[in-house]
View 1 (cartoon, rainbow, N blue to C red):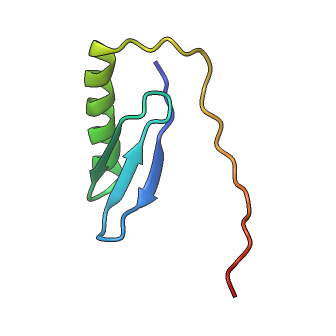
View 2 (view 1 turned 30 degrees about the vertical axis):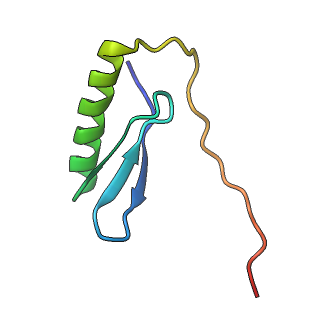
Length: 68
C-alpha cells in the first residue's frame, strides 16, 4: 500500500513526519529515520484501524499576508 508522507524540519533538529491519510505522526533525526518511524507507526495504526478512505492526499500551497 502506498501512502503519503509529509516531512517538516523540527526547530530542535531532525524531522517531524506525518501521514495525512491516517493522521499518524512521529519524528526522527534524519529523513530516513523519520520515514522508518512513520512506517512503523502507520503499520501499527492500520492493524487496529484499517484504512477505509479511498484516494490519496493532495499536497498544495497557499499564501497568507505577511505581517509588517
